[in-house]
Image (cartoon, rainbow, N blue to C red):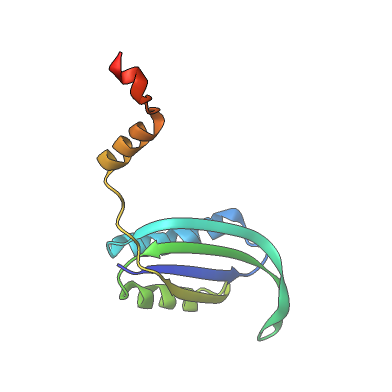
Length: 128
């Protein structure tokens, strides 16, 4: 499954409940397609490098958030459509990242951690 990163700019001044529902709806779409959310970050309201213009509106700030997820490519069309029809979203981009490596075996990790925690004994101490 490829790893994707969604970076989104939303209108400033939105309440936390609206932002949470927007991010939650994206997460639900990913999970419904059999994907996995790996990271969700909110960068808060930030000043933009340039103004974003909409008919009759101009924005110099935006609420910035990002979601990293592993999913099939088919879910991207659904996410793109939901962001396109949401009037509170100013801009968004989805970037494909490196493939998600398989998670290591937990027993192997625990054994390696145990071996790293136990100090080696010198050869002289073993003979006595």
